[in-house]
Amino acid sequence: NVKGIAGGSATITTLNINNNNIFTLNSSGANATITGIEVTAGSTVNVNNIFLSGITGTGTGSPLANGFVISGGTTVNVFHNYLYSIFQNGAIATTSPAINGMLFSGGGTVTTYNNMVSNLGTPNANLTDAIRVVSVTSTTPSSTYNFYYNSFNVAASSAGPDFGTTTLYHAAN
Image 1: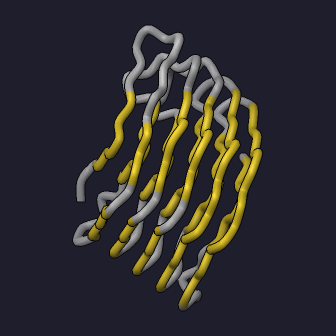
Image 2 (image 1 turned 90 degrees about the vertical axis):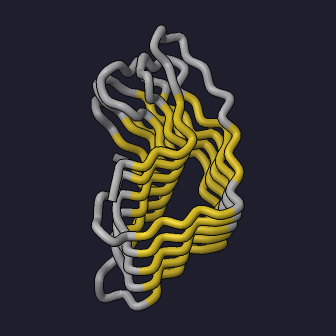
């Protein structure tokens, strides 16, 4: 598994991940995961002014490519970021999705605004939900997710006969 930046701890009062450029991360292998930025915890978390481009995964089984993964934090702010060119090139037909532009699997109050996500691709996937631009899988009771003024450009295709994308996926909470 490959991660560009990973951070977080319950003892961190304020975690700022800002003003970074992340280019060309590659991962291959069975069930491999590649992630641009991952945040696991923190009282106040700010992820902003990130330019993330060139995330590419290949592999077999259920490989996964993620731009951002936010799995914890009491107050999380994700803003003014540009995620571009995230690809999972493996011939995937087992587990959806193959790509998450931004994955929110935890957090108390999460606010995301003025982000742009574009050019996500799974050229060989055979999945009805191959790409999720924004995926909220957290089922934490009383959590709040706010989305304002974000731009998404999904122009994806695949050689697989079953292919689909989701701009905003929300499981439940």
